[in-house]
Amino acid sequence: MPVFELRVALTVDDFEKVTSFYRDGLGLEPGDLWTNAGNGQIFFAGRGTLEVFDHAHADAVDQLEVGQRVSGQIRFAFEVPDVHAAVERALAYGATLVHPPKLTPWNDLNARLLSPEGLQVTLFQPIRD
Image 1 (cartoon, helix red, strand yellow):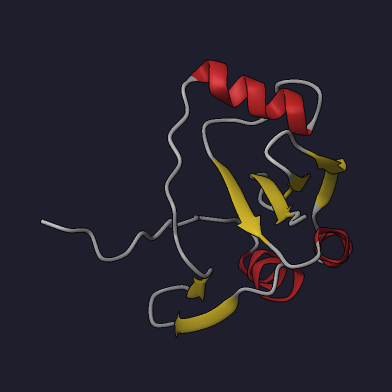
Image 2: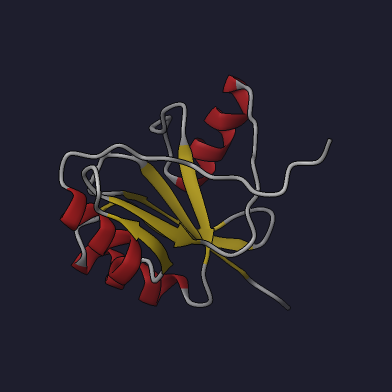
């Protein structure tokens, strides 16, 4: 039986700040908004992928992107067309810079942020030769 869609549901303390970050700071396209029993907002984030790492691989990625182990069990990663512009925009909407853009061995320019609700976020831009 196939899976047709991956959704990640975040429960946050400051709904307006967090939705503003994902909508305006990261540029995710908003979808349905629910207001009948509290607030809920769908965001479309392009193609969805689930990555599953063991602790050693997660540590290796953190070492490459940040220089030390910093991420928790969940980290978002978003491909962007211009990582420098995406970092500046995300910072303007409440993100905290963990590490500025850095070229990885797999030829992506990766930056690490902490989102307003405390999740680790990697913004990455594939570098084509």
